[in-house]
Length: 207
Ligand code: PRP
Ligand code: URA
Image (tube, rainbow, N blue to C red; front, side, top):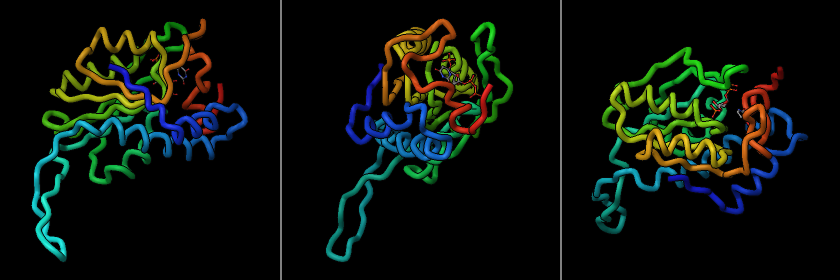
């Protein structure tokens, strides 16, 4: 399942982050702002438990989140979304997956993984600005499941039908939340129109 976050506040920021004139400082700020909105939606189904709180007036029946939240940025571009989700869930734990797309084969290469044990009973949120072919996301989900994770959600800024299809085929239990589902991939497996190379734009690097 892929859900598009079509809210005007998100779409306005998306227009600015896509713009090639937007520099890395603003790009980073926007990645944080957009992530917070998408994650707000992505977390709407996390388990809660009933609690009773004494207000200055009376007892109130309330709900609190009843699961460990583990955020898993895919290095390196996923780190650009970390601040946004931690503003929303400051107690979240953080695991890391190091993956890069081989420039020739376009296939993901894993170079790092480190997860907290709470991935097993908790809710894992993979963050990465781009879900293009889907190879990196599928590899990250594979690694998490091998370590015992059961509840996994993917939050991206931009994706496309090809990437969604790959993830849905390999992991039909995993939901994807995105601010944009673009038209297609180009011959270099970049999302069109996309926003270019997310890692380079976040960190001010270039090929
Ligand atoms: C980008 C992006 C995703 C991946 C998406 O990372 O951040 O991780 O490509 O492509 P896919 O869906 O086709 O696998 P990249 O490999 O450029 O590494 P970086 O984050 O280190 O820049
Ligand atoms: N990685 C990116 O950073 N951008 C794309 O469009 C595809 C993969």
